[in-house]
Length: 122
Figure 1 (cartoon, rainbow, N blue to C red):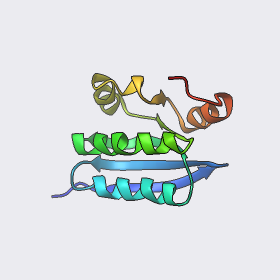
Figure 2: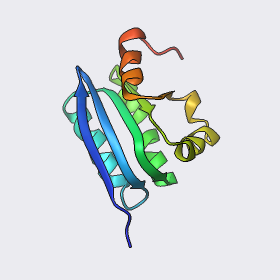
Figure 3: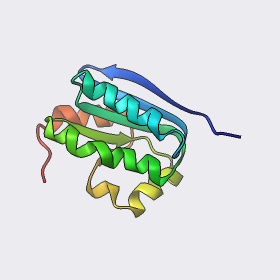
């Protein structure tokens, strides 16, 4: 039985927030890809991905993050990750994502990072 996956979009000023829910794997990764691409097509490059309801992520799901980050940053934006459950966060940390992405606890914290840090240091 397939596991459901949803992406729900909200906005906090000029920051787009993508709320992930369920299983992000090879079957559902295209849904996440389409959501990020829709933001880029709309010239929204300040993105927050909330994983509060993300219960599982596979390498295909992680690949979506990696597939877009360079393009987002080339356009002057960034992608911040927040609200991961301990289980999902551990996967991100094992793979070193905290060295590439700003990972914070909540959506307000992530949005605040856009307003308090004008540029990302390399």
